[in-house]
Image 1 (cartoon, rainbow, N blue to C red):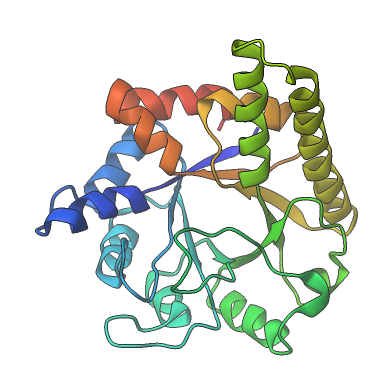
Image 2: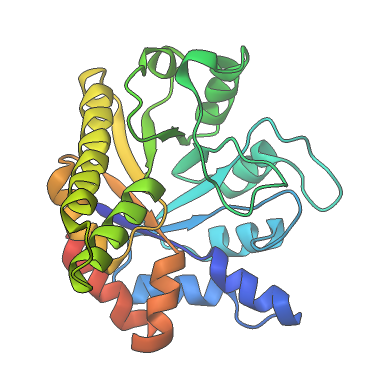
Length: 264
């Protein structure tokens, strides 16, 4: 079984577009939990574009002890006004997991992972510092990467596969088949290549004793095929698609449908 961790960033985007307190990321996280989610993910950016440090604190205080809290972010991003830094957030919230993501202010979304062969020299110290807080540490990596020994040697517990390219290939293959396009065979072959990349990465990590998480653009449509093609995924973090689907089907029902796929 795979743990579903619901990313509530998009709830904060909607709130911030208007100001005020509604919708509340804390309250909607609790709705997800009531519907069966056993994990909640946030990715507070230094520019406060969605989840804020105040949200992190409110969610951390409200979560039941059997629900995992996952905080994503760049441990190398310096504190600034309104953002105390990822470590300070982890020290206050005491999450079950911290996922290191090499993002910057110029990125709309996280679109690449760490290069394991070019990790910052202080990565080992960073990992140790966050583990001392009591958090499991996962590093965001590109699908297809297999050189994970430096990540293991830095002390990390898991990797998280960037699944954006897989999701794009899945959508292209489905569109080609639906429209009987000239290239459905090529699109299907490309999808197979993307799944194979993810599987190679997962197997390489698992062979070194690293756990495997996954996230980015996973949806109800593509999640089952992903989990079937990449055995042993421990956790999926899903936000954008889940919230978009919830606009049609409701948040609780959407969470329940994902739980039916992940099993946990």
